[in-house]
Structure formats: C-alpha cells, structure tokens
Length: 382
Image 1 (tube, helix red, strand yellow):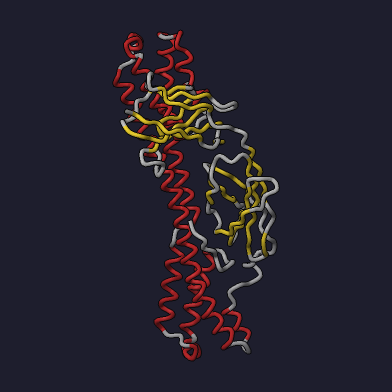
Image 2 (cartoon, rainbow, N blue to C red):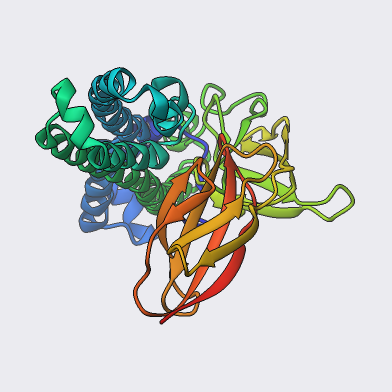
C-alpha cells in the first residue's frame, strides 16, 4: 500500500529489546550523555516508543486473522454446497430432461469457480430452481429452501468481504509497523552513536551501545521468492525476513521490464487481460539482494465473440471464446466511470432488461484464475 521500507536489519523483537535496554543504559549514564542534549524526557520518549513497538501485533498475528476469516468463509461454502446438492438431487429426479440447465451448479463444476463466481452460482441456482418450482415442489422442494440458499449466499458474500478487509488490514498494519520501527530506529541509532563516541576509549562501555552484532546480521542474502499473480495483483512471497523487495514485470518478450521497489508482502497491481506476463523479483536483507524468483504467465484467452443485446428477446447474446469456462458481464450507467457486475455464467445468453437509457456493457472470458481482456458494446434501452 506504500513505498515504506525498513531502515534496520534487526528482527522487530530484538529492536524493541535493544531500545528498552538502551533507555536503561542512558539513564545510568545520563551525566555523561547530557552533553549530547539527551535528557530524562528524551529517555522516557525512547522507552515509550520501544514499549509501543514491542506490543504492536506481529505480521503473523494478522496473517492468522486472515486464516481464520478464510476458514469461516470456506465452512459457509461447504454448507451452501450441501444445500445445492439437495436441490440438484431433486432436479435430477423430477427434471431429467433439463440436466444441462443444472449442470453448472454441480459440485464438480463449482469447485473450479472463484469465490465470487461460486456465490453467484448459488444465487443463480436459487433463481433457476424457483422457475421450476411448480415441478420441483412435487419432490418436496419449498420456496423457503431457496430463500435460505439466497440468504446463505449473502452470508458467504459478507464473509468474503471480511477476508478482503483482513487482507487490507494486514497490508496497512505492515506499513504502520515499518513506520513505527523506523521512528524507533532513528532514535536508537542517534543515541547509540552518541554513546559509542563518548566511550570510544572504554570498550566495555562502548560495546553496550553497539546495535548490531554478528548474530543479528544475516550472513547470506535471502532465497528466491515465490512469484504469484492473483486477480491482477503481483506479489512476492518470501520464506525468510527481508527488509525490502524488488519486482519487475513486462508484457512482451522483447519489452523493457517495469521495476518496482516495495516493502515486503505488498501486492502490486499489474492489471488483467494481458496475453503474457513476465515476472521476476527478489528480496534484500543486510547481506544484500537475494536470488531471483521468476514466473511467466501465458494467457491466450480471448474475449467473447460478437456480443449484442437482442431487444426483441430482451437478452444479451454472445459466443463463448475458445477455451473459456465462463463469461462475465459488467455494465456502466455513467459512461464507463464505474461498472457493476451483472453475471458470471457458462451460458451464451442472459435474459435481462436493463433500465431505460444508454449503458456500456463489457464482457470478458474466464478460465480458472485467468481472464481475457474486455470487449465492450453500447446499448440504448428505450
């Protein structure tokens, strides 16, 4: 979320401990240190910052919160899958001739979907089953069960929003932790420097002000990170602590890399719909820049073909792109400033009458986590 970088190589817990010890040492030697402008109030400020940094939750804490939120969301998905299975069993028994209509909602099909796509599929199954309710009620299906499925889908949507919020919180807290650490380190380095100058001829006292020892400083650069791209965001995942990260990416083999130097664990938006993406990156610690992680993502997926709005039948129609599993439609009522999702479907038609006026409708193909570029049409609804 920012370009903040750590200015120290100590692990956070050791930085907090050293700062606290430094406050004690400065207090014991205040008479000698006063000539450098250090006061009791300065030492209190240092001790306060050290304590605040020590009790600030670690990245592992916020990562655990994400894990918990994902667990709750996945548990809800499993509940929804059971509800969907019951509806599909009844549909299979009562409407065998409509097997293809219900095929997109089977467990085999929905396991390939992203979370937003699954939520949409659950809602769509409720809608499709409601249209066939006159037949399905003979198998014991009630409207109340479809209403419950809709409600559970909304709960899962809210849980997914909570996951996204936890991910943002982790990024924000990482920035806050780096900022607090840098603020504390600035004081520690300054005061420790005074101490080393004052006691340069007294090794026993001098060494009390040395921030880094051989045990603190990494002797080897970090290993190569794992490079991931999720929903248009590139991220470098490290197996050890690094102070900063360097990401490079390009969209053609002969093109120039775009380089971004960033704080660790900070995703960088590179967009979706690229035909090919070349990525590489590495991390840095006190021993220098480490090994390079590399990834190439090939996306040959094309947008849907010939999208139109059929006014006579009141529906969008298009051709599924080769290799695509689904098509997504978004519309804008403000000339492309903002868009809202209308559907994600494996069908090639979508029956819907938009409100009167002019709108932009854009379509893209989806295959697993890969998305094509958008193709857009303008529709005028009388």
